Image (tube, rainbow, N blue to C red; front, side, top):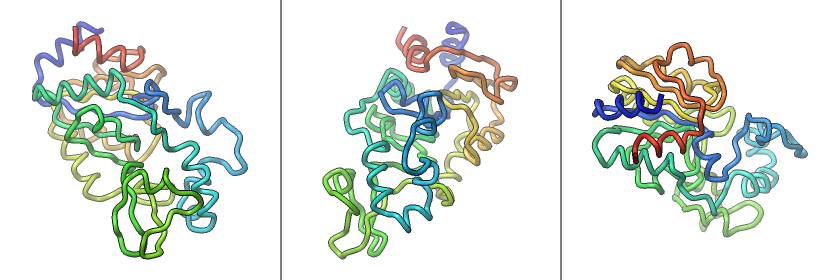
Length: 238
């Protein structure tokens, strides 16, 4: 399968990568839905409740206690998957990364064209005056972070009950629709509407790299069950 994937990559100059939490777990960032994921850990409130818009608005300090503790990982570094994808982009083969992750590791690895469907912890903004802040506005504060104008600083991430950014969605769908090869990696494909974007693919080859089965396996031309960092490093750097 590795040789087959390597050949597909060598023959294509219009690849798009669609990734999920499994891409970042190799950097030490926990996912949500695996056996050891956040949804299986015990908190005062369920994580999916804490990460909801209504909870953020009504219990903002509790939201930030969880958010700082579990959603931000300042020590995480790009892994072999991130680096291999950045290399493919630099070679002109990879045209875009569409990610469900919010950790900014694709950009840290050097990727330029990244559609962050669920936003990024690296960006934050004042809900009152809309001034933008970096990550240190959250990590360098306690309680509810406040803007100089007095407004609450909110992470630029998509919470439950919130819609995806229209421009990001349009860009992601356009990229997928134009690709001739779609590599899907590190995602269970259970999160919608993001997973539905794959239906816009009109190209020739779908590659699926994930450690567990997905509902999309039957549509893929190549299915690999190994860790994505191992796979991408082997086919890009060998």
